[in-house]
Image 1 (tube, rainbow, N blue to C red):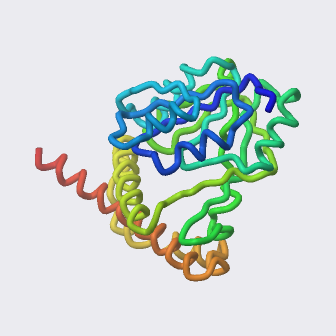
Image 2: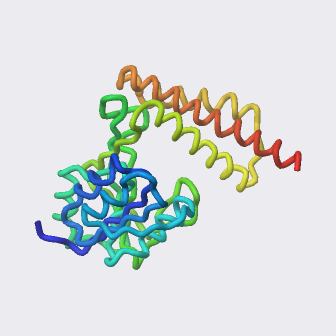
Length: 253
């Protein structure tokens, strides 16, 4: 396959189950960068065998880590994927076809389709879940957010073919992930000066369930849709509960 001057950039920590699929899904990239946060599994070995240049870097937070990874790219065009993501064959073909006409001022959004609980989840707010993954680093850059990081671009354009997301290994992985992200979310709220609210802790999770399961038709995904809606509500509940916990710790010091 003809190579294009695009750098695939991935941050990773213990992603031996996903990293090769991610890299192999971008066969047209002439440069592959993996920034690893000192994995204890075979992530580095697998990435190197798949042709990646691997850099070891202590975890900085999502935005700063992805910014560091983009800095290591040899090309101006950066395709930034999470390790548990992969281009669909259709999306790979679309990028190749459109590459010559890409706008350097733009960041390109991909519709992301997630696989969980044995099926592709197409409702409940999970699809199309557009994610900005392709940009020109001479014109754009990652922000410094520790969570919910974004690429700062002059404008956004969309591609039509799906980015594939193997979001959780199983329910236990989902619970661990929700626990981690709710803690990050609570710290983010605290950093913004937001205070704990009983009303928000009670009503926001309920509203999230209604939104995911009924308004955004999560019920059409069967039992997985119900489980996902409950999980989304509980993650939001945890975020506010942890904000309350952070405030108690701060007051006791």
